[in-house]
Image (cartoon, helix red, strand yellow):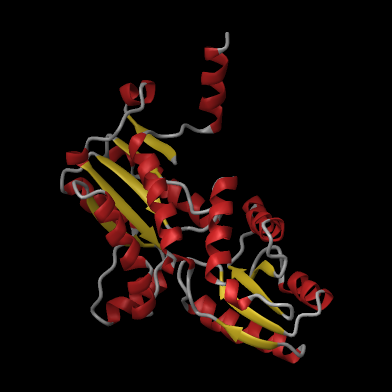
Length: 291
C-alpha cells in the first residue's frame, strides 16, 4: 500500500487507522454486464464490508463510458474524486483506497495520483496494493488458477490467460506470472496480453511448438467485460481458429475466484494496519537505523 497524504505525526509513527473515522473506497474500472458485476465487483465490496464490519465501505468506478452507460439505465456510479469528496463531506478523516487493478500499471498509478490530489481533504489516505504486487501475490494467483482450470489442461489442450497489458515496465508482471505457471508444474498454461507483452504472436508460437490442438481462452482481468467479450472471445478466438485450433473461451474474470477476492482483502488489511512508505523514505529510514 502507499501513503499519499498524512499528518506530520502520523508520518513519524504509522498506526492502525481509527475505525470510527475511516472508510474503505473500493475502486473498479466497472462493467455494464449485470451478472459479471454481481459476481465480481459487488462480491468483493460485500467481502470488504464483512471483513471490516465497523468501517464504511464505498465504491467508485474509473471508466466514464461505463458510468455514463449505467446512468442511462438509472444506475448511478461515482468517480473516485466524487466518492472521496462525499466521504469527506460525511466526516470521514481517514480513507483506504483499494483498487481492483491486476498489476501496478497505468491505472494503478492514476489512482494513486487521484488519491494524492484529494489528500488535503483528509487526515490521511492510504492506497492499497494491486492484485499482483509481490512475488508471493503472483504465486498465490497462479495456484488458484491452476486449481480452477486443472481439468482444462491436457496433452493436447493449453490454457491461455489473456490480460489487458500496459505500456509501463509493470508489463513484466505478466511474464513473471507466465514463467510461474511452468515452474509450478503447468507448462501448458500461458499468460498473454492484448496491449502489452507477452503478445498474441508470442503465445501463438508457443502453442504451435507444444503441438496444442485445443486452446481455452480465459480473461486475466478482474471482470470479464467488453475487453473479454470483444477481444478474447471475439478477435483472439477467430485468429486462433483460423490457425486450426479448436477454441473455447471461458468468460470468467479473476474477481470471481474467492482466492483472488481474499488476496485483495488482505491488501486492504495491510493498508489498514500500517502504510508502506515510498522507496526514498524507506531508504532514508534504513540509513538512519543503521548509522
